[in-house]
Image 1 (tube, one colour):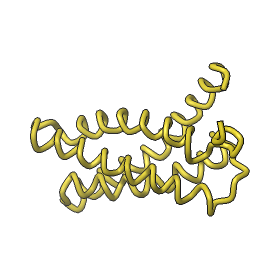
Image 2: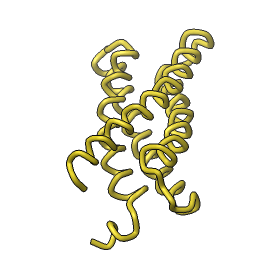
Image 3: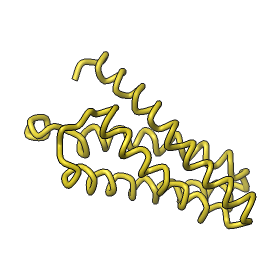
Image 4: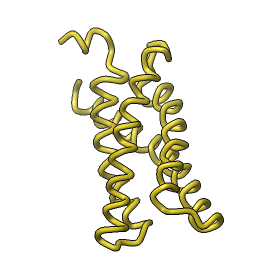
Length: 134
C-alpha cells in the first residue's frame, strides 16, 4: 500500500477511534464518578462500548469493506478482545502499581492499544482476500 494511502487510512482510523474513545471515556467516567465503580472494571466496560462503535465506523469509513460482517466481525472482535486485555492490564498496572491517576493511565493505554489495533485490523480484519494471499 502506498505511504499516502496508508497515512490517510491511519488518519481516518484515528478519527474513528476518537469517536470510539469518547464513548469509552464516557462510560469510564460515568461508572467511576457517578456509580463509584472500580476504575479497572469501568474501563473494561467502556472498552466494549468503544469497540462496537469502532467496528461499525471502521467497517464503513476507514476500510470501506465489502467483506461480509460474518467474516470481519469475528476478526474485529478477536483484535478488540486482545486490545481489551492489553487495555485492562495497562490501566491496572498504571493505577495499582505505579499509582497513576486513572485518567492518565487510560490515556497511556489508549495510545498503545491504538497502534496495535491499527496494525492488526489493517493486516487481518479488513485485509482483502488478495492482499492476504501475498
